[in-house]
Image 1: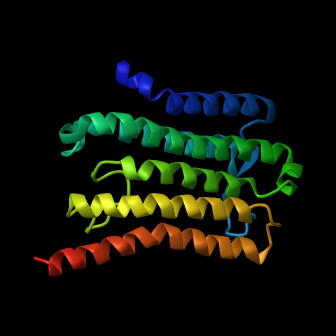
Image 2: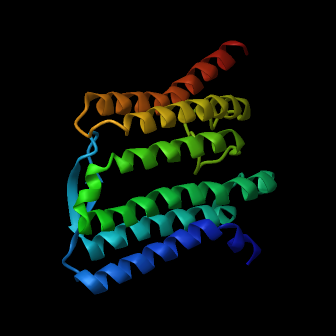
Length: 221
């Protein structure tokens, strides 16, 4: 029960998703469609029935919650650094749940009130906030096979994992700030596409850095 309380944010978001979904399904019916995918310009290019769409978003958050909550039972590294894992994993689960839950609830309101879509690229803003939050958390994540920057090289060495995640934290925060800035521009702006490129570069930079560290470590032996 004590561990369950640590995941209150993640559980709270899932419950809110269920309540909002049931309310709008009761009002609008199961055939009502909600957006489920946006392209790199922030334009909706995928729709799904509210019932199936809600199951998709809720199921995704539920899966992530169970994966991180049950980590002690199938992670070979958990027991070695249990105290650090217990501090970080609930926060990590909460960040992911907040992101997917917010997108889910926003998609329902967007379908009912389409004029909201003209008030800025909300999805891009939330993505930027998520990257900043994860960036602040990355340096605290212990080496494991399920969360963090998991490349063959970070998993091969505690030192490479630590250095990569230190850089990754800064990279994610920078990318998140840039994406939020880009979200202030119109959806069809080339700035949004450029922001996506910067966003991906910031995400891939730590992976490349881990390979460089691995090669340096190998050559020094």
